[in-house]
Length: 120
Image 1 (cartoon, rainbow, N blue to C red):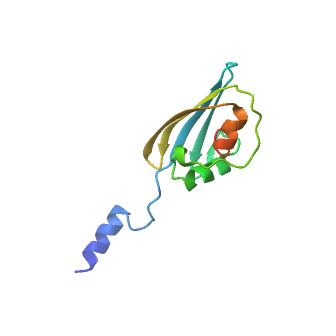
Image 2: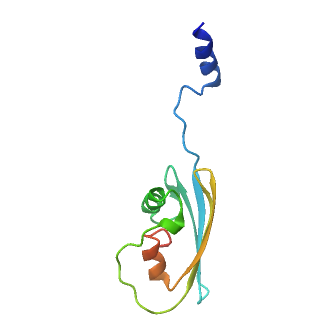
Image 3: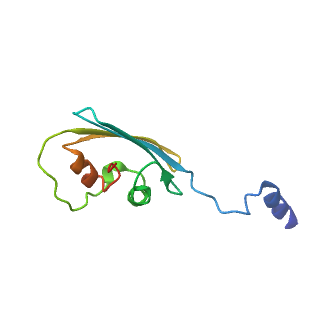
């Protein structure tokens, strides 16, 4: 009676398409001491949203499975001017909740140390 499992498969449609990872949607914000506020939406799987470099940002986050603390800074010189920038990320990464917050010494460092994820 091998036909019963096949019929069950067809009725549920679960055997017809590979499982897709849950979409990833993140709200990214930055706020500096001059009261400049930036906010973008980043969606991945597929890349989208309002982030100006969504493909690169999604690739960076994909490489660390959405764990912002594991992002490797890119090699780039930044000024030593101290103008703190608070950044946040909130949302989901492949179905898992994300809540991240940190402070960088300036906008250049935020862009460099997040490998462009906070480069908006």
